[in-house]
Length: 387
Image (cartoon, rainbow, N blue to C red):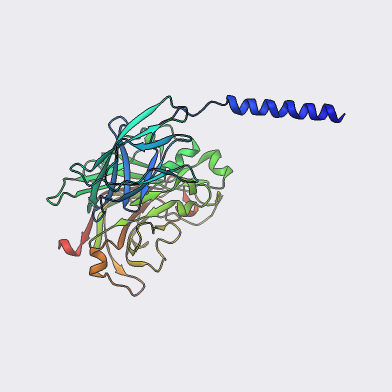
């Protein structure tokens, strides 16, 4: 009996080993993401052969420590080395990190990504671009690298000091994509829309997340738009923490102005249950907070309460009215936590600015009304230095 059992065991082991050996190796070769101390956002261009990395204006281009996310099993290396470069090192999570020197005439480098099975190899031109936030937002442009949902982009001409004033707006659309409910960009909670106050605008709508959302206890998704980043890995485990607010800012904001329209949904729910007698409302706010390290970010759980906050501008809920026509909002920044803006810290890039719009004020905690819709257009951040 034992001989038969042992024989069966070895046959099973051999079969499993054979299956593992025969498993196809990954054929993908791509750069999926890039992070770094100075990185504000990234995008892919030129048919996925160019990769732009936008860094804050105070960044040292000769020493950019970057972490690249690439497909499983793939490898990445510099096509040519430069003074100060380090080799790419593979991290425990499968990402690769290297310090690269971009202090050349066009701030570019070539890197090559090779698939796990060695059948595909893609050479990317990596371009590091010094940037500063613009202060006027028109919602007229879309990043053209994403076909599933809209990614709004603001960009102003390069200034005399070589800085690009640009912003890639973030939203919770990547999380909503997991639900498989939307089939067009217009069916996502955050989308560009026609008939803005001038030209186009942004439309934020609270939507049902369908059977997928019900299964994970996240029954609705509020339309949102914000300055910062979205951590998809936290979307299903800690949704408020998935929205990271703020990028480095070098001015003192005094007011946030713009135009909005709003219509609330009919049925208010919390955790999928109807709450009688309660009505939904929208939210608009901006924060300036201390960030000694660029890696420090506030998120949806603490963006209005953290002790690092210096200034807040937020719409009063008494003024957050329904309106079918465009209405002005004009929000003053008010001091928080007994703090004031320090001129030296401001010049050194030790503050971050975040701006947030949401179609449901409780949307981060899945409270709101399906159908609540907020339109926003022609937003301006007024700063003391510009007056």
